Image (tube, rainbow, N blue to C red; front, top):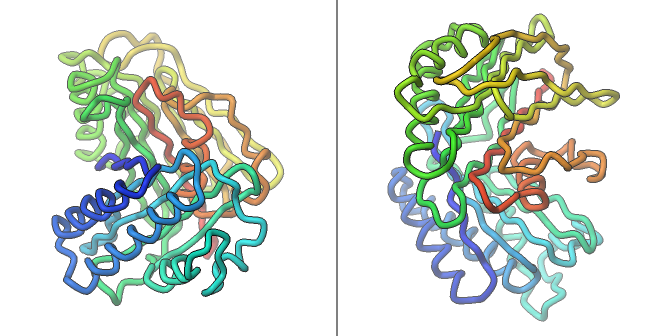
Length: 335
């Protein structure tokens, strides 16, 4: 899967750069002229919002795919003053910065999906999805996925990677962290994803065995793979190394267990563990580029938001900044 694109937005000259990057991405994906125009307006308004109201603002772009249709996810994160009343801030004409106050409303109207999570004095996360086909609606799924995958600052490629296969009865989720960072780490991670894509029928344990054999010529990786069975309401999980994974429900949570080792070099034991899966359950997996000190209960209402907002808030507040980072959030959808 493609890694995210991150654009720091701290002053007005960066607004144009964000628009150029987004428009180039839309063109590469084959967006029609009208849809490209929507992307340009949304990204410009989001970036302008970050300049006007934010501290430590960053805009993230990610490619979306559903069947043969592609889209762009726009995610903005900041540590500004936040919003006391989100609904009021979305009304045309409302502004705290002396502007016309129409930007947020325009973003919402032009987007296929639009969500905000904000806490006063802690910051705001804004999410927008725009599809290449204007008739495309947000796809109906058994599982929603949100992901942030970024390289270490100063690197062009990430040594982390992720992949998923979402189906009505069974879904597979993979997070990989190639040892170190840079091109050699990315090579190991990409190969692990390729093994995943070659055969979605493998169990988590069988996948780890296959990856271990395939990665012997690389520097190796740590990884974790989860299989969600919606009919059995269960999760089978296998992990090697320090990819963290946690399942949440409304009333409880489970930290998923991995064994020590390096895939492609040394594995002492491959073992699958089973856990319950819940209607509207939440699975969070991440590499060690994210600090393990986060707690979801410190963010009232966040678990009810889109997985991309959850991933974004955790990345914003717990990114270590000295390593590649991947945060994958999967959320069950009740029929």
